[in-house]
Length: 169
Image (cartoon, rainbow, N blue to C red; front, side):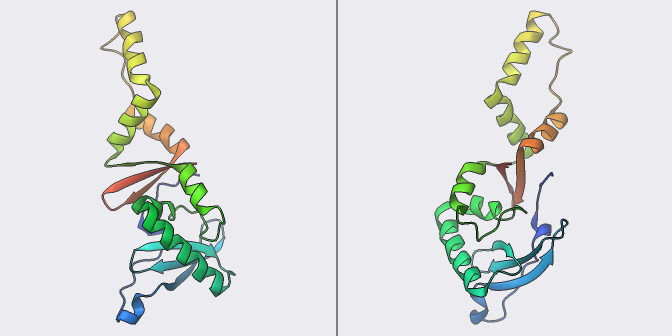
């Protein structure tokens, strides 16, 4: 499943009316495309959204929110983007480990993602060498759009503001 996500997959911003409304709490219950019932919890102070199973008790939600808030303070926006992935539950006891294992980077654009992929895999240099060896430099090019499709098979890309965050699937 391709998960190139934006804020459309979590409840819209809730504008608090008073300072008392600034505390974390339940914001919405939604059903995702697989029929999974979930409660989205929003901490308005940080813009952090969390997904828990719909039947999760309130005290467990508050514990998960406190832990996620601590992890947000420790890891910043990449962690907030990670929490938008559809298969991440805030109640996972290994939440930080899963985040650290899956986080692949922060990027300004898709061009930067593709450029990094090419450098890491050394494909561009290898292809240039091959093309030069056979006198085909003007005929051999990397299809960057096709490469984006390949990257989406390996990474979940989550837009957050002006940045894109990549996570290993």
